Length: 186
Image 1: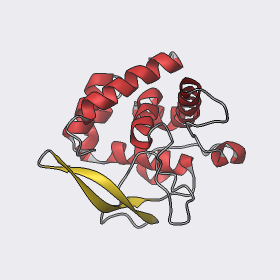
Image 2: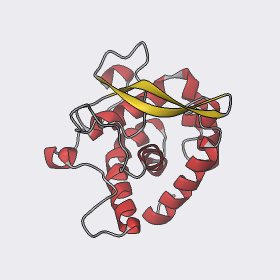
Image 3: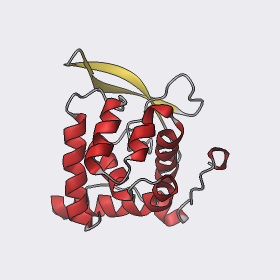
Image 4: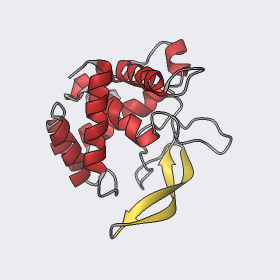
């Protein structure tokens, strides 16, 4: 973390162990979404602020990528891979990985593929890696520069190829607006 000039705080052990899930016993879908956002926004505050990103935007992208925590990436044993952002393990990744069947869009058509994704020991570690990826990759310079503008951030991530879904920008913009409404934050 410090090698990139960024400082990230690791949450207290109890907070780090608690999964930011959308489902809770007897919670309504709206309550579950609010709980998910609250946990991710809290974890994202410091690392997001360090690079100029809205923690609400970060949490909204985690919500979109993980289906509000319901469809997060899992290891073979069923445990969480703590990858709420669907970050793939490219050739330069030397950490743990997990193979997942995913839908990619090729020439505008959905195609099922098995891809390698990054795996982490905690949600805080996964979140810190996501912020580091955006902050240190020239590919995402425009997205980071628009880290306080919902539409600009969404469009820049899509343009940079964060996801292959042709409707990614619109989907992320809608989730950001919902997250803003739920959290009461800009």
